[in-house]
Image 1 (tube, helix red, strand yellow):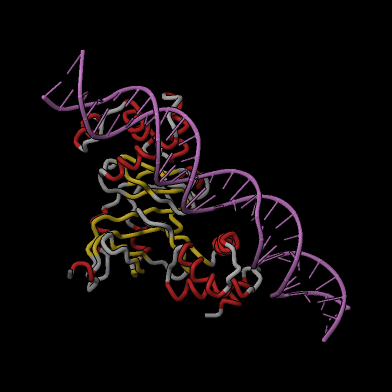
Image 2: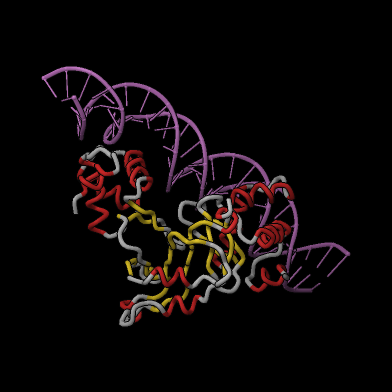
Length: 134
Length: 134
DNA sequence: AAGTTAAGAAACAATTTTTATCTTTTACCT
DNA sequence: AGGTAAAAGATAAAAATTGTTTCTTAACTT
């Protein structure tokens, strides 16, 4: 993936820190601020948490990154990709993407309701396969 | 609704503060901590934010109250009721319940995926009816 | 390539949000 | 009514997030 271009398209300067943040987000799929800070600090030992927050928010405001809020968990951040849902295992804490037809989900709103959804957030909480086999 | 009983069933002492919290939650449907604090303070001028947090968490742990996480918004808290989804208007910030068959939503997970959902969180973000007519 | 400038990084500091600790009060069970 | 454990109140401390100022650097211009 070409992060430089993604940043430039949004008039965000391409800095090593930002490239590092995006690379880590992509590698892990979705990552919490704390984890991101631990990992990015290994590359940029002097980076501050404030810089991290500011960058992540700049990327959220320009629709490059998305915050995923999870029941009973800290938020995770991911690079925006095709609409999808998430699976959260309440037993082991694992968290992963799952492909679900979000348009269909949006079509399930009761008829007669005039709400026009532009985007939906769906998190399934439950027991993952690995934990079922324990 | 009989809040006293709901509290007793969970071995939570029935205190005026708790009854007040539950009444406010019920009245508003779902409420943020800040709003709750402003309102509960009118009844119990000496209540501390710490007490409020402690109570709300005690109620969450005993499955009496649920935290609803909303993209780009502070969490709201509601008394647990039948499974449902939420509508969040990105224009005016209005937030309301909507009845959606959550079992069907859970049945939409791809076949072959072994995840067993116990509960799902679904928030539709978009434009509410009122804002469409502006 | 060097100079300019405006955005970003770093270094704090200050808020805001949430949790912990300790003392006093109160609900609830004989 | 009295005893006890839990909850409220009062801080204070810890976490999380945001703001400010100065220094540095990316990227544009010549």
